[in-house]
Length: 78
Image (cartoon, rainbow, N blue to C red):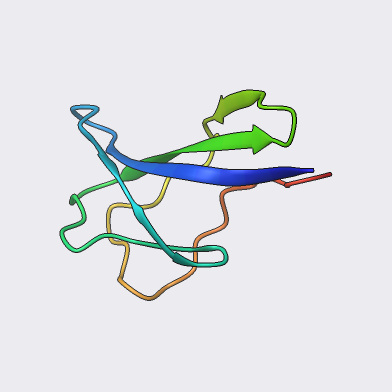
């Protein structure tokens, strides 16, 4: 089984990334999120210790709003 163990939120124009905090389950937060169009990087970790960074093709739009849901297009499988 794999789990997302880290998430980075990156500004797409200058590639500055910020590590998000996991609050519970699949909920990740930041007290000071970057602005503009954003991309995600997710670290998938397996029970055997294997780790893989995944970068979704879909970005978060420039006019994103806090509390909204954006589909990364990534499917987590077992």
